[in-house]
Length: 85
Image 1: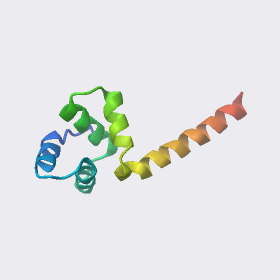
Image 2 (image 1 turned 90 degrees about the horizontal axis):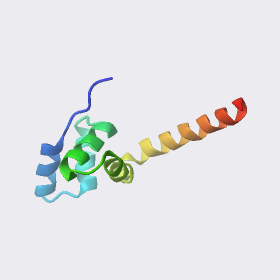
Image 3 (image 1 turned 60 degrees about the horizontal axis):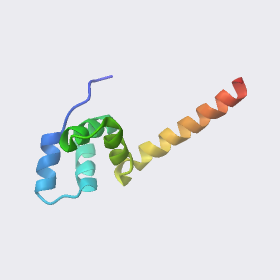
Image 4 (image 1 turned 90 degrees about the vertical axis):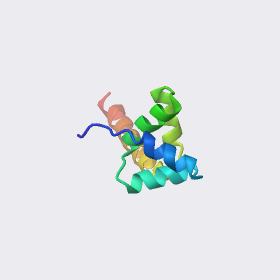
């Protein structure tokens, strides 16, 4: 697994040019940024906690596919835990 990349300079430029946060996430994702990169970037840009940055990124429709996949994974994991108990 590669280390997270901080795209906060790119985010700052995109927001300064009039992009919305969702538009900026779309562009960052197109550049190859992962959801982890976006969380690190939002944390750096907003100077917020990792939990808040995670909430901001995961609430974006740009990352809904990732959020849905994570929810499905956790649901399946929960079912596995229920059967193991």
